[in-house]
Length: 357
Length: 268
Image 1 (cartoon, chains in turn cyan, blue):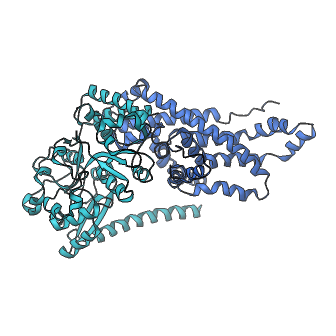
Image 2 (spheres, one colour):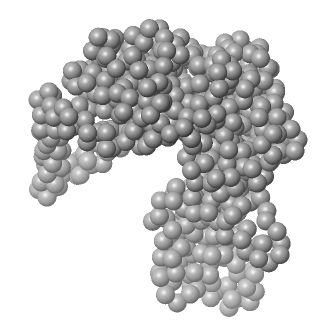
Image 3 (cartoon, chains in turn green, cyan):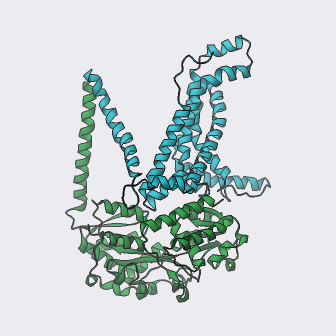
């Protein structure tokens, strides 16, 4: 009896000590809040050398935390109790965060380096006048193909994915919006359609794609494409870049008839503790030299016009990652759709997946 | 008396916090739609949409197949293990794979099954050409069964070990053949182990989702896939919870079907 009571008490005491320790540790870590900058970004999405450089230049201590999906990041910030100073959400999440009053408007006076950003990436529909966000990297949805298995000419356009010659050779990214975007574009509809009839039509078209679909997967596609498992994949430019670095037989195409263009953007949450440092950091990352260094490390396309000039011609002339004007015109940004419509996309997608045999 | 009550407190606390509370929360969530309004629509949609019903049938069918395959492999394994010297050692070898993370094992299978993988390498070496192994029903069943086997072997093994050898000897003494002894004595006596094994395999198989994507390439869709999607992508927690409730009900049905009905003497 006594033993149990002691054990019970011990557990309670340990729990309390852990809680106290956590609080003390956090206080120590944030050191009064003025000396630390906390960044919440995607994994491996910044050149670590730049963080060190920023720390040396400004004397702040940088905490770099990572997330792996917009949704999980959003959930964490929504729950509160976080003190991130800079967060890097994708464009539709910026829109959502704006709607939910989670991010603070930016003062452009404090961001003189904003002038280096290419005007075509500013003032986009998801954030008019860039009141809340500054573009960090951008990219596209496109087709990656293996030149050993398929002729490049046969996979320049979305509709070509339906070619019976690609039977059981196409891998799709496991994301309702992206897969529907492909079908919607082939039918000349907006990738942001809220029209259920158009979605049904898109689904019907997708069902015809099923004989060609080998798998509907997420990050694993990188590995499979690198290992020559399939001829063609529908994926993001960033992932494509990684695959190409490993397997030189892979090539990436952004269909000229249109595709999705996405932006990852720096924002400052309302709950930020160190807004001064946040501004300094965003400005630091907008510096052409730093942006170029970062783009070289991460491998994504930079929206920074001055930084783009600093990059090797081999990179910036690559039409797959910096598409020509004619293609850029046709690229569409995802808008944050009402949850009800998002549910429709996903239900229809789930049904399509069940059909995928 | 009071002493006894105190013993219960930690367990009761544990059960309330980590078993009952989550169940109640799932049940509660399932009555809300995406706008946070109280509704029964989630259940109505589940029952009428056809998609979810088909998905449920799909899940049950695959779970049934996985359980069947696992049972067919595990029963003889457990039976043979029981007769080996050093049986604890052999049992350890069967259990050993469960110490490795599920995801890691799945990735290992990707390495084996892929176009450039070990198995295709061997097939090509034998002159049989390379085959599509990944993203097929067979590979999905294979990996799922592989992962579940220890959970089936263990209860059957324990049950077989408990059978009193004198009962088996008596059967032989009375002139029964090996087959008759197995059918009339060993099999009925090992039923509780088989049932426990089925419970341990069937229920998790209903909601497998990582393997459906990694090995099945999302060509096999189970209720687990739908739950994942509702919680992570569409944020329709109500619908996700509804499917969760359905899984819990399915679990109770399985428990009831395989449960030990009070044995009143049994048949003689």
